[in-house]
Length: 379
Image 1 (tube, rainbow, N blue to C red):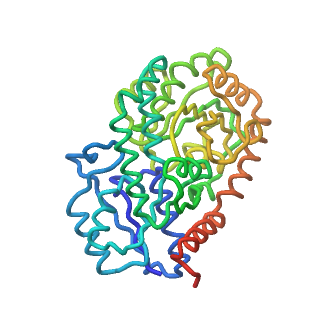
Image 2: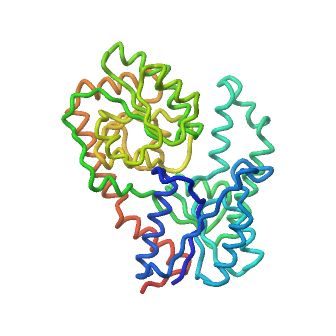
Image 3: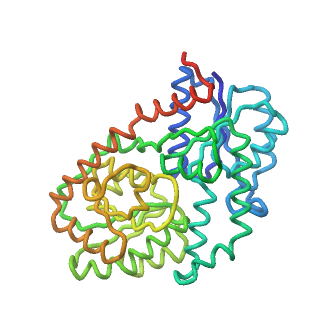
């Protein structure tokens, strides 16, 4: 079996969700093929001048030279199928269908992007006026949904991260060939050791700091959670770690006396000083690598339902549930003042995550997906 994986070319090597998932998918498919020589990754650069394709906020305008080279390699290699990193690479898929109309395409939907964009757009407006978002952003939402419907109509199969996303995709796109391929546990968590006996009071937030839902979460922590928390736990501090923080986020974190670690190359030291991870996400999509890695390393988690959506974890069994800033303050204070009980919960979450999202489970999911699509019969 020969395959090509098309991904968005990353400009840096800082760990993040999409490259972690892409790399795991490639390694599993290579293992199933029993020869890494039968698989090829092609990274496509986003055109820096145009960025997004006209009329949509979720489809990238790709470098024309990269598309030409990709087509030449596909014609030379003639793979059995091509795994494509989501609707963002719509332009590449359209070019493939024109040049190689019989090519079998699998779309790996890291998120249902049209739904995610609608969530982000709603939260751009004040809460009292969010009902107007459907009118303000209607044209872009229709374009996003249209691109997704087109790429899904082309696909032999669509991969999603969770059962929740599978149900959403079926509601939006009707009866489609869909497979649930969960996100992976980052490799570094398998060998890293976290010191659970430290006396620190560090609240950690991890995420791409150019992503609107993460920026909103950091603002909630800085403005609404930490000031109240410090009245209960005076030595509590916030550590924000993530890629590409803009000036406003950097200023917000540091002006409030907190710690910022931009573009950390290694996450193990980041978690080594954390007492817990706090994730006050109000919108977003997919399943969060930040939750998987925190639980896999055995770090207590305080999170909204949205933050853990699709992971199958249970509130007050695997994580401390909180929705409002006041609830986050109460839950974080409980973790910091009763660390033994908090660690017991974190240990339960660690066992659950490793059993459900380990490499064996992901390999089984990829194998089942390829068999269902009649792309792999076993070797």
